[in-house]
Image (cartoon, rainbow, N blue to C red; front, side, top):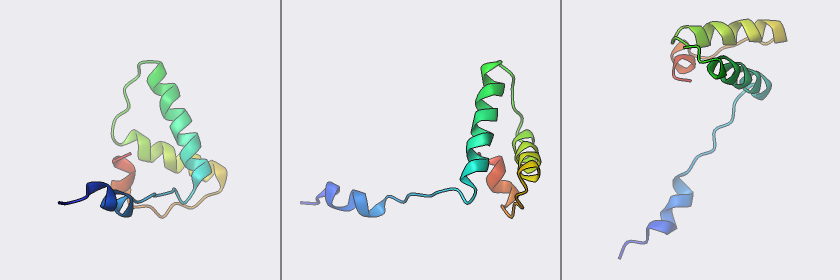
Length: 70
């Protein structure tokens, strides 16, 4: 019989952000905008993350597609 629990912990991956501070601030911004019932289009998140990164002095090297999937 196949033991499912035996393999579950081996398959899980924890992925952390390269810039955790930027990710935290971006999430706070996202929640604040959504709490005002404003819609956020797909191109707005990468633009905001780039702007926040510049203000924080961080150079982003992320793939734009990854930011759009946020």
